[in-house]
Image (tube, rainbow, N blue to C red; front, side, top):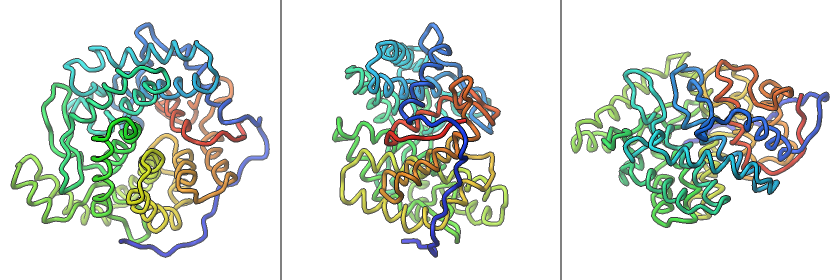
Length: 384
């Protein structure tokens, strides 16, 4: 078990001005604004994959809005949200979203996979899982489970391989937050499918050996399983040789400021995925493993650093991600959770449009990521 020197957590200051509303009201405002964005086929305008500025399909934005619309329908009972959610879900079941009946077509970046690794599949799996339960459509749960189950999982390494949209199995997704977010998304299916729960628990048991941190606790970007296991995987399948490269690159990137900036930016994304696992899997061994990762490695030493690092890398909602980790592991009180939510709202929320679309080069994608707030407790927050 890795360890760091703990220090008292410091939370961001909240602006005393602005309107006070509940988080559920915020979600409803965003969902109502999103109704005007939805297209005839049920999809939503695609984003550009944040800082990477890559052409995406509507799959990820539609999946995010499906989650939010389902939650708001659950809150309000307003059929307009059920109708929009059903239309979004139907798009994800369409041949356009899954053109070959395998994984979702998430991006069109030249020279890169169209599935967008594991992260391109995580969002639709989560969205369909949410909608399937709320809308009472078991076929949505089945579709999410089928896509999850397509991905080969190595029980020795505790890692998933990528699967291209035509069903071709690719090598392991070497990006740690992709693995964690994929597990966190699928955790929403664990209560319905024992097979899913079993695989995610194995992932969590292996997680500690795949995570490497810097001396101050910042999580390294690449997975780094034990070298011997990486070599064994490469011997069994030559396409897995990059796992060995991960080990070498990790050493090289130790001295890269740009890589460190990237790792700081993606730190909250790792917290987000681990929090989704924690909230959806009721297991002593899973809780213990995750709690050690959160309390001993991640939060005490870096909770402020990973937000005020002023990096353009990482997820669109770092404050909400941190708030969810505090809530899911019962580390902070409601005031701390509220303050971290407000760090995102202060700079990113547009009170005129009702969308989380400010201060970004990718407003369509960022606005959709308000979906990460659906798991937070309803409480008052300041906007504007």
